[in-house]
Structure formats: C-alpha cells, structure tokens
Amino acid sequence: MVIKNGKIVEEALKSTKINLDDLSMLLRSKDIFSITEVDYAILESNGELSILKKQENQKTQNRLYMPIEIIIDGNLVYRNLKELNIDKTWIYKELKNQGINSIEEVLYGEIQEDGSLYIDKKS
Image (cartoon, rainbow, N blue to C red):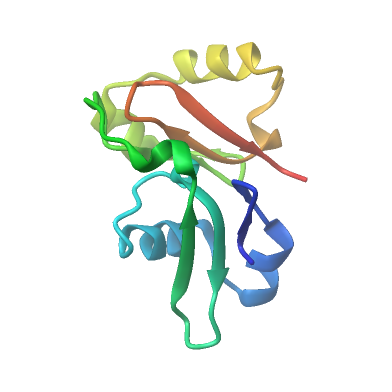
C-alpha cells in the first residue's frame, strides 16, 4: 500500500523502489491528477496501481490549476513553480500557515485545483 488514508507511505515507496515522480505518473495513468483524490493506493505485483478514491472527490468543480507537485522530498520543483507563476516566498508563507518551519519537513507538496497547497509531511 503506497497511499493509506490519503497519506503517502514512505516505507512502501522505499521498499518498492518507487520515487514520487513515478507515483505521480502512475496516478495520472489512472486519471488522478492530485494525491488528495486518493484514499488508498496499492501497488500490485504486476506494477499496476489500484486506487480507491476519496468519496468527497467524486464531484466536478471549476479549477484554477491542474494539480501539480511543487515539493518533492524536501526540495522545490522550480520548473513547476515557474509554470504556475508562483514564487517561493508564497510557498514558505503557506508552509508557515500549516505549522511547517522548514521545507525539509515536507515529503510531497502539491498545488491544488483551487490554488491551495496540499502538504504531506515526512514521517
């Protein structure tokens, strides 16, 4: 199980040798563009990803952005920040608002469709 109760399971990623870019690609192949849409994700023995979506994400809404990762394993993804025209000052302010003092505390950060910042902290 690589996502459990909407949270990335770091140990599972390490043991399966899947990085966060690979996980994002596998999710997109299932038409999931945001980790926040997922309640559970299981990496099957054949390499396929089985997904159980969160119920509240079964609705449609107007989106400002396509969800995209901007922090991976404590590092900013500058090409995505540039693409969205978001500066790192905004990111640090949002982290502070969520009680996070250092970007190194973040396993995965993603801009949501509504422009908010989703954070999955390291264990």
